[in-house]
Length: 241
Image 1 (cartoon, rainbow, N blue to C red):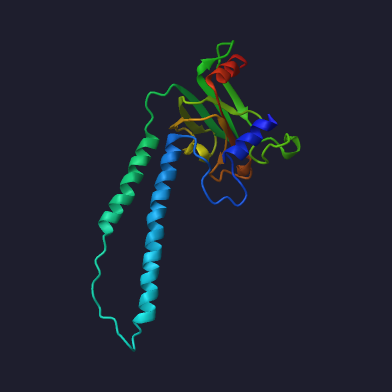
Image 2 (cartoon, rainbow, N blue to C red):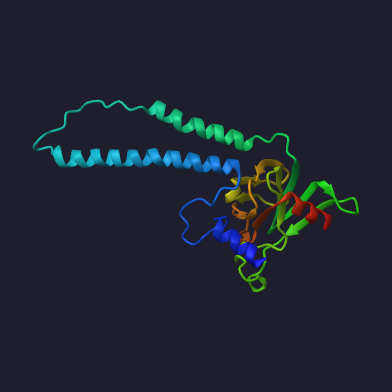
């Protein structure tokens, strides 16, 4: 268990890291799209930053009002085309993230103050009931060696890799938010309402998230841990439920 946690953390950036300045390693197609869109926009922003900075510095140095007054002229900008090439890929990405079609399985995630409940409506136990469990934060005093403080839970969500999974997200009391950065998931959970988001995890690993909506005094005690395993291991896990 300890070796698996350490391999997941050090071989892949699947959890928050101190002074982290970039995304966690993507594990789903939608997160790859988010990272690619971010990198493309940042590339042009850096070019624009240096270009505009160079122009401003040149104007300040060369065009002093006493020596060479600047004549007032209109400068045309490509505002419309800039909006088009920025907004269009963002809208396409949002559509792909919201589109949920033909999932292989579903998982119901319900937020409570302050823990998560999960249900697998596609699978039944020996008592002909849905597989369901609560997931609580593991106190620091009970953590295993190598586990992550304020991120580890007693019951993880186990999912098979390379499988289209639909998360149905709701809340039992106040507004929560189901967020797992490495999977590109961030969906609000409202009482009395069902939201959905799809995910296809393309590799094995352990992915950490948290409630990202300030939901009360123990808001920081609602971590989310999703473990992606092979189909064989997932079937074994199902048999043990």
